[in-house]
Amino acid sequence: MKVMVFDVGGTEIKYSVMDEAMRRMHTGSVPTPQDTQAHFLDALYQLYLPHKDEVEGIAMAVPGFVNTRTGYLTNGGALLYNTDTPLGQLLAEKCGCRVLLENDGKPAAMAELQAGALQGCSNAAVFLIGTGVGGGIIANGQLVRGVHFTAGEYSFVNTNADEWENTEKTMACQCSTKYLLKWYRARKGLPADAPMDGRRFFEAANAGEPEALDVLERFCHAVTVQIYNLTVLLDVEKVAIGGGISKQPLLLETLRRVYDGLFASRGDSPYMKGLPRCQIVPCAFSSEANQVGALYAYLQAFHS
Image 1 (cartoon, rainbow, N blue to C red):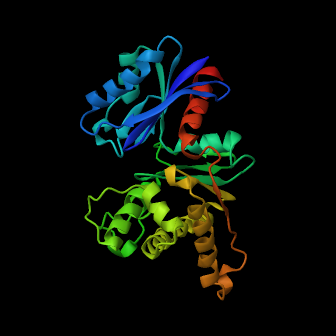
Image 2: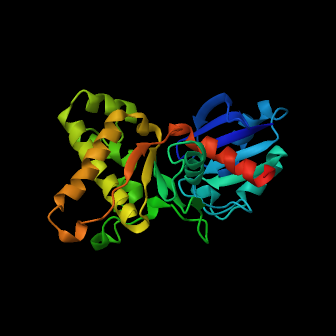
Image 3: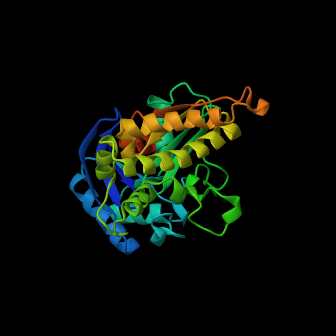
């Protein structure tokens, strides 16, 4: 049994054919269409077409608020053309096969809980750092979807109550790769549209460039404050970091150091005594976590 698996992000669609043993074949990626849903559906169909005779269905992680039972999106997230549309039904009709949709952060949490960095955890979380910030929450050993399927939508978390109307004071902006690179361009005095990606940034940071290291420190402070908040709210044992830049050892090293620094900065407060700290770990499946988790969700839906 094989399934076509898509991990749809704001800038690219990663795809592969996978079997029930989680082996990935025919992998690749293409840019995510930015204009219309029709273009988006056609792009998916063209990727599916060469494999339609070897796969039984499609599992897809996609941005937005996804009703996993119906495949309906009440919000398209980074792809607003999917808002208020039955995306799962539309894709199933176009490709002529069954389709399972899941929010683009929750599959990663499922994968890490089942076979990755969060195995054996009761309470834990996954942070996927990309164009926005996705992820999933594990409570009592189960994925939390929420009544409206929006649990774990970190991008919408406000980061400054005094600037509520400033939409940049959200995790989507303060904790995303997009803004990490935006801050770096500004720090270097580069044009806002200057070519830049995570690889170039970490080349500079790993080389010890002061501007890159300053920006990385600011970024990791923003992320670890939210990890601290999760620790207080949910008493998580581990937070697994995913997304493309999670493969950078310097990122994990800096996150752990800055997280420890948060506790040290309030070390004299008696109210901090006994407050637990979580472990910050890399996702075992790294940037492939969403594909693995989407397949787990598909198998649960159609083969359990």
